[in-house]
Image (cartoon, rainbow, N blue to C red; front, side):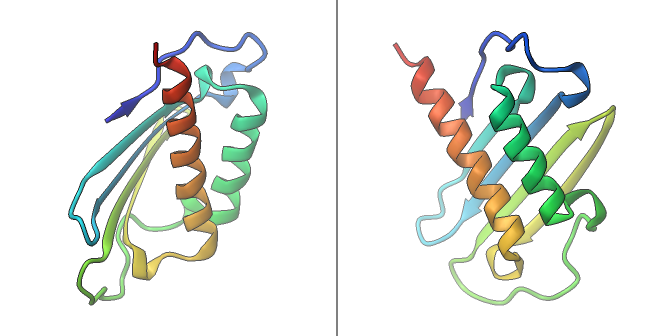
Amino acid sequence: MYKVELKPDPGIEDELGMNIELEISGGFTGVTRRFELDTADLPPDEVRDLEKRLSASRFFDLPRHSTKPAPGADLQYIILSVDRDGQRHTMERTESLQNDEFQNLVDTIQRIAVSRQRKTRP
């Protein structure tokens, strides 16, 4: 699991605070990867990027589960949860049911989490 714990950037406003959890499992290797971000620990440009991608994907408007069947072997299964303004929304999708905006959001979360984790290693 990638867990990033940094001191908050003093430029981040409280209303921008979000906790993000991403789990990706399955795929060809069957490995499960987990990522967690607390936007209070991120610089303002990364928070704005996440907000933009959340908005573009319509994350908070979409149902938890997809309504279409998702056939196919070796598909990745994605669970994304975001806590914001005291509310939690979770989406579960297979990679075959993702739109480009949702995939961009997932990619951005992974990129930021891995980058932050590398910066905190001794």
